[in-house]
Image 1 (cartoon, rainbow, N blue to C red):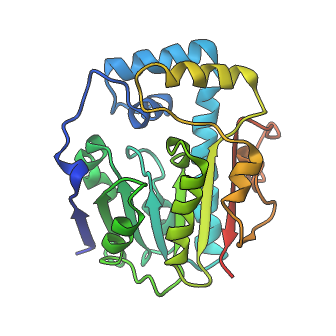
Image 2 (image 1 turned 90 degrees about the vertical axis):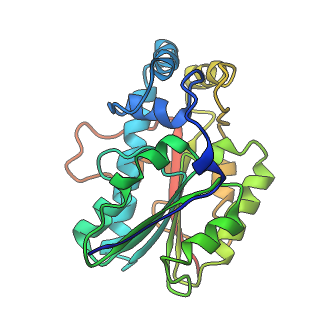
Image 3 (image 1 turned 120 degrees about the vertical axis):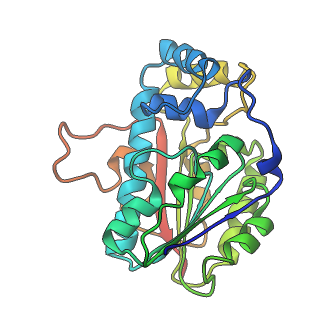
Length: 272
């Protein structure tokens, strides 16, 4: 049987609040999923009414993550992933992409949304050779995350840390950098950091829609400048092409039409 585990935490005891929109459920709605409520659809539709391009951003973010994981497993030889801010399960979850290439890969998912925990069984569908686990924790709890992850991952071996569209929920950029530093400090040389987040300075309509979203009662998500996103990789060796708009990060050779920049930047870097 595949090695599977779920580590409960404070988030595991929260109730699902269907009266307030939630970013994970809205994101799921934009990706075409069904794990959302009317309040999430309403917030998602209000956003797309101002900025229809958010659907492209959501799907481009997912494709960026898929290409990152494929590189990490196929070219970098990574066999362990710590995916913080997992979101609701959808197509091509981290373990599905990684284990298609290397069935022995081990993955720990981390999220603080009780609805994600309710769907964690999908994330625990590991191959027999590999392992998956789910940790109910917040990104602002790096020590708790690391302690729980160590029950499934060997953190003395190279590990890929994934922070996809999660650091924008940490309002203070210094705190966000501190979280990244704490998590990466616990990983050995040869580990990798993958980050992508919404970015400023590309599309003012996107920024207007995000400001309205942040006033809707949902947990705010803070767009950052490209320089701020790049700073998360300080001290690491960026993989070409560096921090770029996510459709431009090693696009599929068959991509047509040619990808264009959007308000979402990301990169991948190796710890020396």
